[in-house]
Length: 427
Image (cartoon, rainbow, N blue to C red; front, top):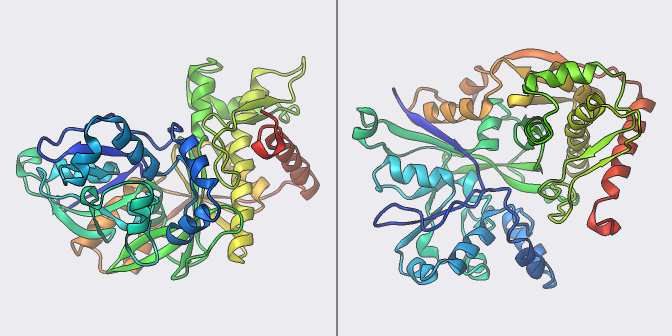
């Protein structure tokens, strides 16, 4: 084994004791909304969100790590003082793994994970003192920030029988971007797993979004960040899991394709899966899910189809916003993640987006990207061109839906969303 890489949930937050390595509280996962009220208070301060966005590229939302860290420091006895004294360590899951893999020798993260905390200045490449003060997070507990492809450390020999270098780290969506070889400005990938995350390479330029997308770091190599626009959908595959486990509509996820094909259309049914609020471009943490358009003729098949269609409508929201913000004409979308094994879903996605959808041979792009970054970090690959050559398309899906049908379906989706969003007062 020449090297290992880490791909991780990005905003999920852990605080641990440096002397014992044990967490002082359960990890707070990226979907957790407990700090929504704190974000609302911060947003009520005129100019505050704009200040944060200008530095981090992010919005004030409980999705990100800063308010999660602040919550732990506020709610665990003595934690704030210990953090100020340098006795505690903060990290996303990559940092926690690095610490334990190296026997406590390394407290670090990479630029892509740092960029998701609301505490990192993506223009200056450093933890921002003003933001640390805003969220009352001591600098003493923050990890060192490194390139995405670099030797972070060497794993403890006792774990795997050899001291393997850890030479690639990236948040899961950025790792997927590397796995999908989206290295040129204008290339875009979308990962369909628990949630859906669409990322557009913007090269050397930080594109400030007017459509409430995120400006972030795609990857950082040799000290140079490459930037991206990102749209986050909190619930994609999780809606299918809900139908399977909570409502028991089917027993295996692969049954959804045949169920969707068994009806000619959605029967007027729309599922807005805002189970943990709405992500981009709405950013409404208080919105909750809705199932609309039900009649006496509605069948399980219509609801299953509506859940799959919702993934595509949300993707259209993101792609339209990206095209507006970047000024780029996007003609191809590279997709990955567990959901993309569903051919019906990808054909409907191509029809709704009106673009070509490419599925690679390896749909586990996050793991692949971490491996490629690790290989680059120890010299198995020389440059990004060599990584580019590893990508191969397994199947392409082309739009074939009439424009009037596409626009009618999307209008129904936008009407459904309008019924649950805060600005329309529907909850």
